[in-house]
Length: 307
Ligand SMILES: Nc1ncnc2c1ncn2[C@@H]1O[C@H](COP(=O)(O)OP(=O)(O)OP(=O)(O)O)[C@@H](O)[C@H]1O
Image 1 (tube, rainbow, N blue to C red):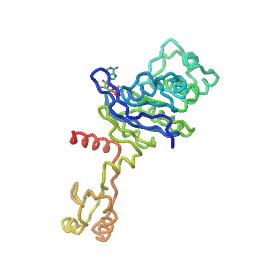
Image 2 (cartoon, protein in one colour):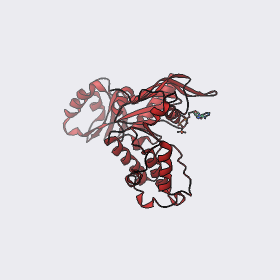
Image 3 (spheres, protein in one colour):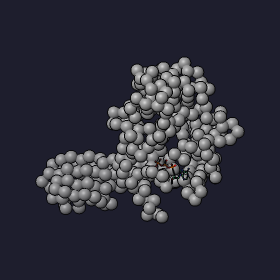
Image 4 (spheres, rainbow, N blue to C red):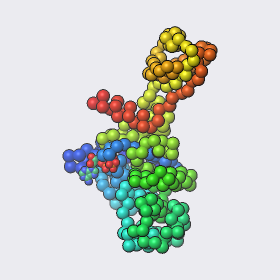
C-alpha cells in the first residue's frame, strides 16, 4: 500500500535540542494512526514537518509524494486538514464567521460550512460569538475548520486534551466517521488507554525517537514475547500444579487461589492443555493481554536499559 504521507530518516533539531531523530514512518490511506508519547517526545515536531512549517536537517518528508516545505508545498498542503494542539479563535467572531474566514484562507467555498458545523454538533451555536463557547465547543469548531475542503489527510494534535469524558468520546467518534469515509487520520495524544482501540496503527515516540510502530498486535508481538495467563484455582496444591507445567513458564504473581503465569508464546497451547488436565483444581483461565499503556512502559524501560 503506498503511503499518503511519510517521514524518511528524518532528524530535526531546534538549536541544541534534538527534537526528532532518524524517524522513518508512513501513513497509509484510509487508516487512523495514533502518535503517542509523553511531553517533548517529538509528536508536534513530526506534525509540523508534514505541514511544511519546518524543514528537517536530515531525511525527507513527503505528503502525496511532494515535499510540503518545497516549491510545490502548497499542493501538498491542500490535501491536509490540521487541528492544532491549543486551538485559539478570535472570541468576537461567530462560529459561522470563523468558518468563512478559514474557508477563504484555504481557498475553498463556504458552501459546506453549515454541514460541517452540524457534523461536529455545534450548528445551533453557529451564530453565537466564540467567546460564549465551552472548551469542548471550541474544539469541535477546530475540527470543523480542519475538515474544510474535504482533506484526505487529517492531523489532530492532542484533540482531546482538556475535554470532559463525553466530549473525548465525541472526538473519537468523529475520527471513526472520518476514517469510515476514507480519510487518513493522524492523532497525536498522551491518552494511551483511550486511543488504543480507536486506531489502526500506533507509533510510539520517546525523546525524539520512534520506539515502535504498527498495529497493537504488532507491538504486542515485538514487545511482549510471552502470554499472560490468569489462573483461578480451587483446593489446589499450588506447588504441585506449578511443577506439572511445561518448562519455561514463570509465575509472575501468586495469591491464594490465583496465579498469574508468564508463558513463552510458543508454549501457550502446551500450558493450556496442562492446566485443563488438572481437572477441578483449575476453576478458570483467562488470557491477560497487555494494553497500550503497558506496552509503552515496557518500550521505554527497554530503551532506558539499552542506553
Ligand atoms: N520552537 C522550538 N524551539 C526549541 N525547542 C523546541 C521547539 N519546539 C519544540 N522544541 C523541543 O523539541 C522537543 C520536542 O517537542 P515537541 O513539541 O515536538 O514534543 P511533543 O511530543 O509534541 O510534546 P507535547 O506532548 O508536550 O506537546 C522538546 O524537547 C521541545 O522542548
